[in-house]
Length: 102
Image (cartoon, rainbow, N blue to C red; front, side, top):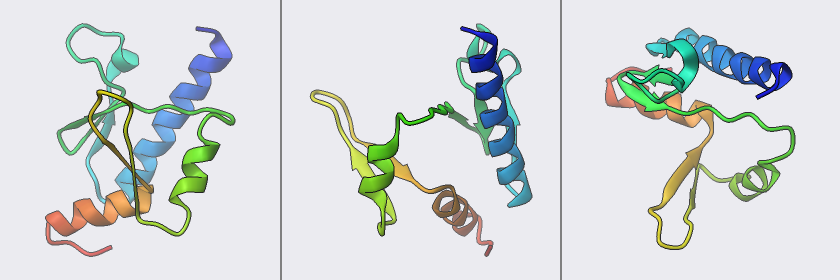
């Protein structure tokens, strides 16, 4: 991986952690960001492991599909469904499970 790609990935992870922390959610970057043997993930969010992907134009279709909707479910053949949601929806959902309001 090139330095520019690595830096872009770090910035994406760091900025997401800042956004979640600002909303009162416990979020941490994993040291070595998934390269360590003890934990293969980019972030820990309230005990959940998370992978962060940042692309210049790789997700345009996802943004188009979720427009004016709360959730997007995607599925590849012989794989389980994945749920895509905006960060605000995630924060609201997580805070609602803790009995908090944003």
